[in-house]
Every structure is written in structure tokens, then in C-alpha cells.
Image (tube, rainbow, N blue to C red; front, side, top):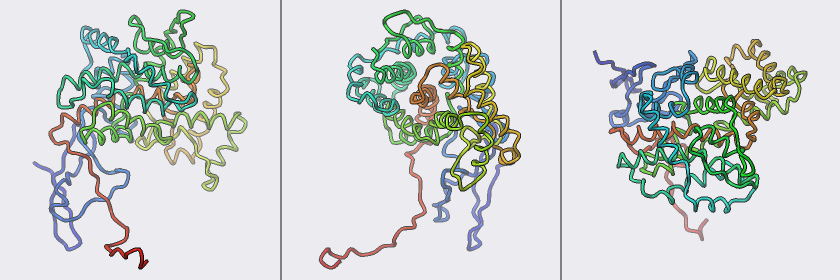
Amino acid sequence: MDKKATLTLHDGKKIEFPVLSGSIGPDVVDIRTLYGKTGVFTYDPGFLSTASCNSTITYIDGDAGILLYRGYPIEQLAKHCDFLEVCYLLLNGELPSAKQKGEFDDMVTRHTMVHDQLNRFFTGFRRDAHPMAVMVGVVGALSAFYHDSLDIDDPEHRKISAFRLIAKLPTITAMGYKYTTGQPFMYPKNDLSYTANFLRMMFGTPCEEFKPNEVLVRALDRIFILHADHEQNASTSTVRLAGSSGANPFACIAAGIACLWGPAHGGANEACLQMLEEIGDASKIGEFISKVKDKNSGVRLMGFGHRVYKNHDPRAKLMRETCHEVLNELGLHNDRLFKLALALEKIAIEDQYFVERKLYPNVDFYSGIVQRALGIPVSMFTCVFALARTVGWIAQWQEMIADPEYKIGRPRQLYKGAPRREVVPLAGR
């Protein structure tokens, strides 16, 4: 039996709308015909109660603390898979066989080089430019270097663009870092894994051979997996909105990177680390918590709570374990900031003020500490996030392009400006 929802208007008129059900999660009311039937729109700032699309990629149950990629729990993927397996899953819907994984890994590896003229593009930026500003510019410029794969209606072009973006983002990210430090660019090596290659391009020099530490490689690989996709968040919605106009994939991903740069989105782990630095010592946590509770202080507890998760962020536990592994491997188990983070976490999760508001640690609370331990500077944190999220953006973009129902994005508004009025000529004003 078809489900229906009934809307009663102010004049008593009743209008029925279909109720659609997903495979899991809440039902949605299909209001596409609302304006045509009633002459009114819905009002939903921030899209808190609006599904902008249907998708088969990622599912989040914020109340239960569940995150699924193509139906697989994030905990299992982070434990049993590497990042490129997760990339294959997000793009193709299924985990690869050994043969498929080998072919996929090889294809990504063969696209890691960037056009040699792109090297010169970096010199147009100041050395002290923020790495995210550089990343937005360089990724946006890729369409000028790879214009042989820009036909979004051609499945083969979309496939090639996807491989190019996934493969070249680590190279571009590392080049951005090297440029700011004045060190020479490091070219990728085909005998290294995706993540080991990135670490080498970041921290290696031509002076000596770089030997990746497998514990650190696995830790960063897990960071990539945990950040690969996260449903219809702000940056993903930006990629979809840009893509709905028919923009090329490089431009769409650059738009997503620009959105991710916002401190309320991709900059949260950087803000969390800055918060810990400002607290400085575990003895000052009590004073800091008091300020957080004072609404007039303007002090916020960063790394706790989430727009979607109203329970524990499932990624946070995994990130916490990874944090321990990295610090133990590097002999930093007495690291000041990590000990401070643990003390802050213990107080916050036991304090009724935060428990009642369901402010639990999220993935950003620990990921900044892990990246800091790996030697990644704070200014690069969001770049690493963008590198990891690129595959999710591409998967979402491809899904949208292939959806027969997709249309150019065009939100409505509630206009509260001046009503119609007449222009008075300049002499009479």
C-alpha cells in the first residue's frame, strides 16, 4: 500500500503527497509538486529536514552513532581494508576482488604524476600562501591541463577524471607543502602504496632514500578511510550543486575544497588543536570548562558534538585507537597535548552539562593530534581532509550525473525585502 502524507492548508484544503521509503532510515515526504498544487514553498534554513537527493553511497544514523559506506560499517572497513579498497567501494558499490583491487591500484598509481607545466603553476603563489588557497587554485586549474576528459556525458571521460583526481590529489597536496617550505618537489614512486607515496612526497628529499614507517602509513591510511565520505554535508552538497550546472569535475571538486576550508567544516581539527594549545595544561581544564558553560564567555569546546551525530561519533573511537598506536610507535605516549586531550575527554564525558547535551568527542578531537604526531603542520590538516574526501565527492558527483531525476540546483527563498517600488530619477532624490 502506498504511503501518503496529508497537508492541511490555512483555508482547510487538504493535499496529499507521496511518502517515500529508503532501504533504511526515516521516510521522506515527496514535496516536488507542492508549489504547483498549492502555490507555497517549504522553509528549511540549513536543510535540516530536507533530502536534496536519493543516494546509495553513505548512510548515517546520528542517534545510534552509525556510519555505513555502501552498507558496510566504518569500523569494519577501517580494520580490514586499505584506502584504495574503500575508494573502489565508494565508486563501484562493491568491495573489489583481489584481481579488481590489483587493477584499480595499478590504474591509480599510473595517474599519480602531474603535468610538468603544473609545477610552474605553484610559483604564481606567494610562499606564505595558505595551502588550502593553493589547493583550491591548483585543483581548479586541472581542467586547463587535462581537457581531454571533460565531457561529463561520456562515462569513459568521467572514469578517467575520477582516476586523475584520486591519484593526483596526494601529489598536489605534497607539492603545496613543499612549495611553502622551499624544498624541491618529490615525484611519486610506483613501487609504494598510495599512502606511503604521499608520506614520501611530503617528507622525503632527494638527499636520501625515504623509508616509510608502516605503523604511520597505516595510521594515515585510516585517517583517509574515516574521512572518505560523510553523506550530504556542506562540501558534498557544494560539489553536487556545482555539478548540477554541468560544470566539469575538476571545477566541482575545487568548489568542494573551497567549502571544506570553512572552520565549521574541514577546519574543525585545526581548531581543536588550537584549543588544546590555549588550555596548555591539564590543571587549567576546570577553568576552561567553566568558561565553556558560561554562554557569555564566547568560549567553545571544540571537537565535541556533531551536526549529525547525537551519540558517539563512530569514527572517534577508531581515531583514538590510531592516536595511541602512533604515539606509542614514536615514543610520544607522554605527549603533552594527547594527555591533555584524554584528561579533557574524561571530564567532559562525565560532566552532566555535556552528557545532557550529548556532546561526545568527534573524529576531529583526535585526528589533529595524530597528524601533528606524523609531522603534518596545522596549516595542512584541512588539505589532508580534502585529499581523503575527494573520492567521496567524486562518487557523489558521478551518482548525481547518472541520476535521471537530477536537475540544476535552485533553492527557493522567503523574501523579506522591500516590495515593488518605483525609481525616482537622480535629480529628484
